[in-house]
Amino acid sequence: MKALLLLLVAVCASYSEEVDRTWTDTKGRVITGKLTAKTEASATVVLPSGSSVELKIDTLSPESKEYIAAAKLLRTP
Image 1 (cartoon, rainbow, N blue to C red):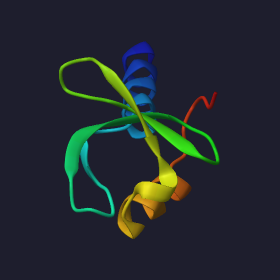
Image 2: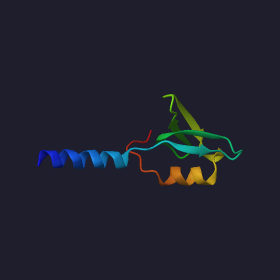
Image 3: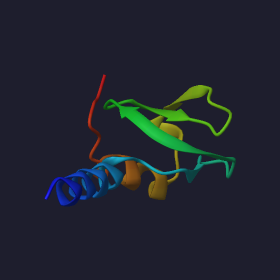
């Protein structure tokens, strides 16, 4: 029973975790990283190198904006 509970917790945690994705701005520039926080005006993305960048939402492509709007984060600043 304990093993089943631990498996369930691990599966649930994996669904709430963001994954690396490609972010595109309106000029066609791209970066890859995980969304870790969002506000109405910006999104924080952690790059594969471990550094984080803040992206202004109004400079992103429609697809990137839609992803941010739909993202269910465990925390927001």
